[in-house]
Image (cartoon, rainbow, N blue to C red; front, side):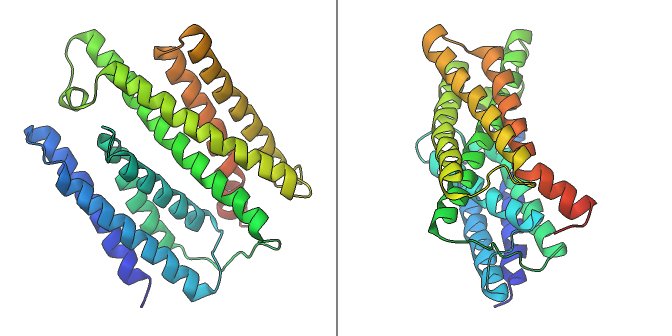
Length: 266
């Protein structure tokens, strides 16, 4: 089976799910099941696409778009699982279209497999924990943006329909710190596994990733400590969440973007 036969329907399912969510917000008639079911379908097809790509090349392609597509799948799955018992499905308005775009870009710009020279179970733990940490903190960053918008709209006394559809402000903050706490656990596992299993964590192409990841870990840890000790919330939580996520974004994808897409180096 050609991977494109799974990739294109996956992207379409994500896009249609997003359109249905937008239409529900505009009309005020919400049917939560339809967009979520379509997003589940999109994620299953997305996973099938990646598996077929893996089968086609004999190994996972750690190129920029292939890695971004895998991370997008993790983010979608984490959101869908969280939506089973938490009111976070509206985050799909930002996540589902992005996942669809990354699937398309991965198909449009295919690259040869980039095999990892030491791809054993230790490195697998490091890679998996890194991806899950980034995915959880990505959701937290999107939630922080919505929280900022929600706070601004409520202060103006003219909230838009999207804001009215979100959970109460206090519930949004609670969910935000739950996501940050879980993401921090996986980020800690990623850093520890890197220090233990990777021989030279400060090698040429890993130095900036390591330093930025450590700074991000310090920011998220301080934010959680401040929440417990001093009750930090509101703008403080939003600003530091976004700063920490931007550092992780640069750490995880900054060098790959420059080396692969700008400098055209492997």
